[in-house]
Image 1 (cartoon, protein in one colour):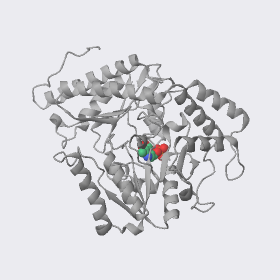
Image 2 (cartoon, rainbow, N blue to C red):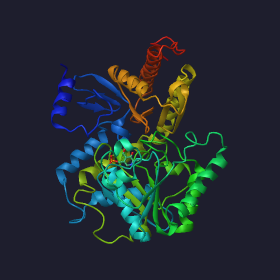
Image 3 (cartoon, rainbow, N blue to C red):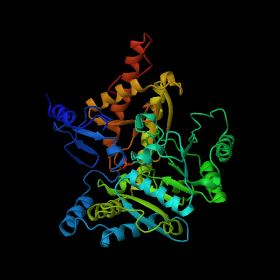
Image 4 (cartoon, rainbow, N blue to C red):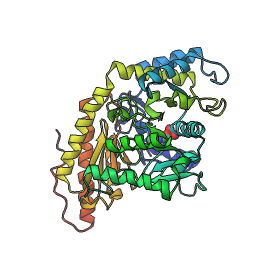
Length: 454
Ligand SMILES: Cc1ncc(COP(=O)(O)O)c(C=O)c1O
């Protein structure tokens, strides 16, 4: 038995299966840049980034040094007990990067994406003195009870109820799923009308504290909300005094080619949530919001013992510095263009591709049997991803039906590593499609010889 297999066996003996595994047999022992070395010493090209955490790259020197230096100085302070500089300095940096309007912005720090979302809702409820929240289908916001409620995919929720009250849900403005026959203006109009109708049929606008959405859905499969829809949401929120919350946990910190995905759309939220790549690998998250909104919350209602741990703050400041020094927003655009081109080539070669979508380096390829968007192909996707792992590419699925493959590689990935990973991904997809068609007694899909290198 390999060391990886032994490790997984030990895991299974002591870790509950509820802590699920995206990638069945993957292990990690050490990592650098975009490469992970597994427990057997095998090198893997990282297309997952620990689910979008490693934009700055694994063990970035600047981040590691900052962690070591801070660890020698102060490992814990608790911001409720004493004020320490790394917390304040990081909040200063965040409000500089993400001004929420021109009347002042404030930030607070916690430990995970879910905690950021929980606290964002508390700020919105206190600022509006209203209870209700509107969330979206295919949205993912974390695994605490409120965040599980806000999350749409039932696979994340089974048996976890009863869920938190006063959460209402609308379809995400995903034209690919429902509305391909409409032009984009008519589609957006229909979706905004749906929201206005919801104020009559579901929950009164005067009872809604916040509308929360991911500008680019992460777990939902990299759907990008149309700009006109986001502008419409902004207008409706302003009309009714509703807080607009953008969850940037997966899309933030250079992933889409800007610091925030919303910065592509010229729409500013009242509150936003951040985590993952913000910490360069350390657990830290943030809620950022307009000063008047953030200051409406009463002392003691938000925060926690560990939120904004000094080592995590130092790591985050160093990660941001590295992102700036290496112009990772530009690199994200280059990576995204390269991945998208390759996904489009796969679509040309294989009739099981239903969609290619994303923003910047947040790119996904969506599969459906024979390219039919309404017939997901999770078995084929699983097979292709298992094939990738066996050949040293760690990639993960997305989408409620597990029919999407997403690329969230570190942004320090070299072109050679990226192309090598994409070659393997392409080959494994074509192999999996051919195998499934063969099992079903169909002629194998049109495909090039395996092993083709670009
Ligand atoms: C958009 C979004 N929000 C919130 C979360 C929850 O973050 P965490 O797992 O750190 O609690 C995630 C995690 O994938 C996410 O993608």
